[in-house]
Amino acid sequence: NAGVTQTPKFQVLKTGQSMTLQCAQDMNHNSMYWYRQDPGMGLRLIYYSASEGTTDKGEVPNGYNVSRLNKREFSLRLESAAPSQTSVYFCASSGTSGRDVDEQFFGPGTRLTVL
Amino acid sequence: DQQVKQNSPSLSVQEGRISILNCDYTNSMFDYFLWYKKYPAEGPTFLISISSIKDKNEDGRFTVFLNKSAKHLSLHIVPSQPGDSAVYFCAASAGWIKAAGNKLTFGGGTRVLVKP
Image 1 (cartoon, rainbow over the protein chains, first blue to last red):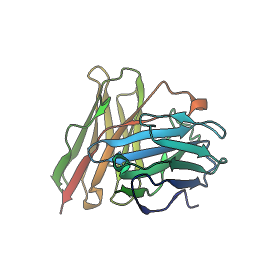
Image 2 (cartoon, each protein chain N blue to C red; image 1 turned 90 degrees about the vertical axis):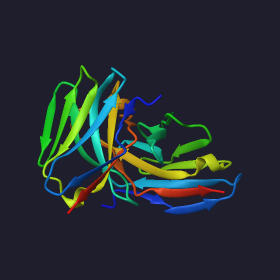
Image 3 (cartoon, rainbow over the protein chains, first blue to last red; image 1 turned 180 degrees about the vertical axis):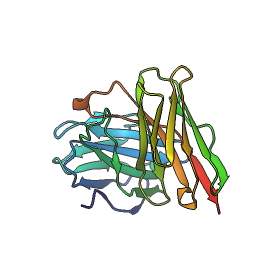
């Protein structure tokens, strides 16, 4: 099992350009998430999808859109990139572990720089 | 306003000694807490968790303590090993409903360096 995969690993954009970050999981998880990590800020939730066909805003959704394409795939789109969106982006998924709260499994991240 | 805070950005400890990482939270609705470990250029990996109905959870060298009245939790690593050098994130979950997925709120992280 590959777990959670993300493409691309690195990307440089100019202000105003658009791009889509791809994420896929092979663990048959229902829930998927997009986070951004900035120095000293930890991980902040951008959007999440509790199950196929649903998406909801997280803590910092402005400037982003998402698509839950199917159970496996959850993409994040930047329509008009801004320097403030320079960050490392992580996708995660969670299933039903039997615990009270399911731990999330993270992908390796996409390092995005907006010039 | 950060609801989960890790006030120590870094920690240096000698191999074999104890590492103690601290985390404070402000939201009384948080009822489940997790610790994640992150190496450079990798995604975070789950380490250990604790429910608010407990005050301690242990898994091998890792123990998490929860003090609900103080809204404080800590992670103890005993003994510390060079491979434990990483960034550790505290995370909390509130109002959890299985059908809605479990949203996590993360602290800013503590960088741990274990010296041989």
